[in-house]
Image 1 (cartoon, rainbow, N blue to C red):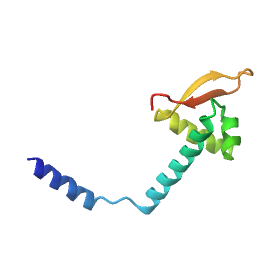
Image 2: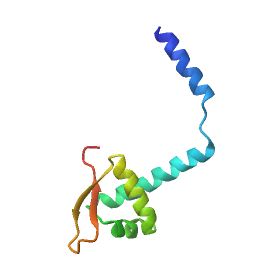
Image 3: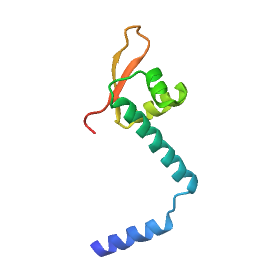
Image 4: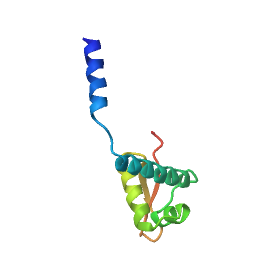
Length: 94
């Protein structure tokens, strides 16, 4: 039975391929994720601070931080003194 499952998995891997576009998107996302994680290793930052540290436009920084938040890589912290932006920091559980 175990051999049959292994054979089925092997066949499925051979049949299903990932397009070059999807591979490129994943590679780009992982690069952005690393940039943001490196910036947050210094401590919590707001979106504008993350954008400045990573040299990304604010809308792109927002997109990637929110994606990372969705998947648990980043958590939302306190709001800044001006009540404008939340601080984001790395999830210590990961």
